[in-house]
Image 1 (cartoon, one colour):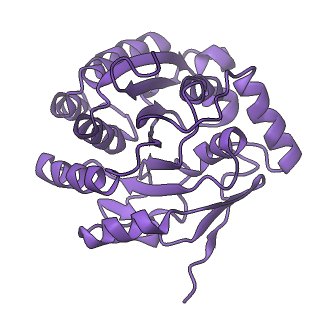
Image 2 (cartoon, helix red, strand yellow; image 1 turned 90 degrees about the vertical axis):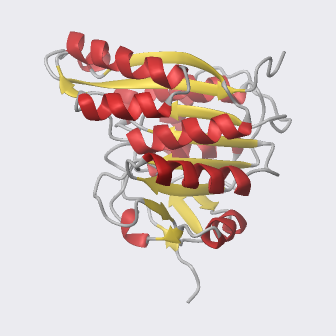
Length: 281
């Protein structure tokens, strides 16, 4: 059977549902961007949030502005959270393309095949109601065009040995993709008072910046942190170490209270970049 196009499920809720309104919303969030048309000269990584654009959009846009000033990726790998628990611990997508009101973006089927050969399986159920990957797609489409391919992967929190094996497989598959952006889609603390959320998130961001996935996941378990994309973040850390993109930087941090003015129960958002030391200098 011919692979199908994955329809948008978050249009009209997490982000505007018409082409004109969505293009305008993303342009407003990005503002004036220092855009380079040349391909990235080395891989880059990015952690960015996936809540509704009025809340997490400014922080996500800050992360993408940091990437776009370095160039254009040939493929965008999006490691999504798995909010439903469906599918595999690590789930590949079986669609040929993903659709948003801005158009149809192809899935890099060559990378899917490489990862399938390494033992990672396609699990369509993981993507049916999952918004964490889709919410990033309009940023990719506006900045680099609908023709820029993506590789969507849903990630649950993984035991360390499984995480290490998955990171090896993904890094091996990406070895010849020097102009590649690897995105981990995650919000941070959920529904805590603003001051508590910021304190918890500071504690989680510190091991991320230190590229310590074990300490990050141990902290998530010990403190019962509600970071929904913890598995995606840990996988990005491990792949980044293998690809040499080990220069980390916190680009932006905010909470939903910054836009809603309700600080009684907020969600935290962070944009963190991963690059090679002296990249772009």
